[in-house]
Structures are given as C-alpha cells and as structure tokens.
Image (cartoon, rainbow, N blue to C red):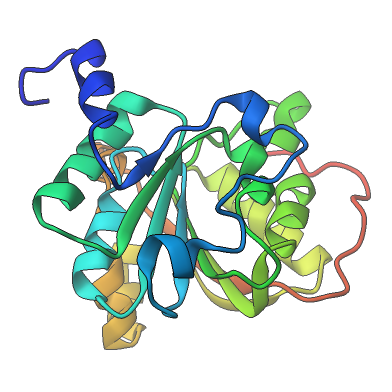
Length: 241
C-alpha cells in the first residue's frame, strides 16, 4: 500500500498519464472520445489491444505488458485505490503499452469501437452467485453482447476463477451459444498446466492478489478460453450456480 490512504492514492492517480477516469455522464449511452482512437492517440502504434476486465491492482495488465511489448494492454476497474497500484507500477517502469480505465464495466462498449479489441481477460471477477444477479456475471449474455460490439472476429476471451459454480455457468453458456472452447480445466496448477503451450504457461504464471489468496487457502484455480461466434442466441432460461 506504500503507506498511502485512499484519498492520497486518488490524488496521485490524477497525476498519472496512463489513466482516464470519466464521469458516468460521459459514458452513459454515449461514446467516450477515445473510442476507436486508442492505437493512434494513446499507444501510437498499431499493435493488438488486450483488455483486463475487473483488473483490480492490474497484475495481469502490468505483467503481460512486461512480457509482450508488441501488444497494448488496458485494465478496467471502478476502484481507484486498486487501479492506483497498477498505474503506478506501469508509470514507474515506463510501460508505454499499459493503460487503465477507471469506470464501471457496464459502460465498456462506450470505450471501444467495432473490431478494436483483440483479446479479453476476466480474472477472478465477482461470481454473483445469487440467481437474481445473473445478469451481472461478466460472462452472462448481457456482457457477452457488449464484448461482441468491439471484439475482433476470432478474438479470445479468457477466464480465471476459483468459483466452481461460476466456472460451470460459463462452460454451459459457451456450449449453449456454440462458442469455440479452446481450453478448459478445473485445476490449472495440477497436471493441466504442463499440457499447455509454453507461451500460455508464461501468461498463466502471472497471478493476481486474489489468486494468491485463494490458492493459499487450497482453492483449485479454474481456467478456460474461448472464441465468440456470430450466431449468439438470446438467453433462454437461467443456469444456476
């Protein structure tokens, strides 16, 4: 934490040039000014864009930005005191390919244009286990439809979670929607990790704060990745966790 309180972190966050913090009124049912312009105006290159949704302290955005300098990474989270850590690390290490958006993920389609994003990481999101909160799950039809608005054809979505119910819910949605399931394991750090290609192993070696916490408690870490397809059906009933 560096001894800083929330107010100090929020104040310092305003001094970083690798973060935007739009008000809700700027993105509610309207496009953010950088939509469609991230490569030209922010990263100043034509490299692929990868999102980390619910990025927390930005461990994946920063870690992948370090490992893959030829890709651009954007972490998205509403908690400013969490984003402060990732933004500060990226700022101090001069990672020009790492950026952060402080906003609710509900507004994610306001930030990115059609085919602007190549890949999405969802790392240890709130599983929203209550049935009435199904729409809030980041792999629900509501959010998948938002991703389809800006994810390139063949773009990949990754999920890491310790919550088995949420993991099974996502697998069922992938099957229902005829998405292309590329990888799936209920125990990533068991035998499954050795079966993955070296590049994927390198990426998955990056661990978030919550992943370390859950692993220390003996929780299995579940992982999957899939590609969206164009024949995404409307929601038909609910899948309980």
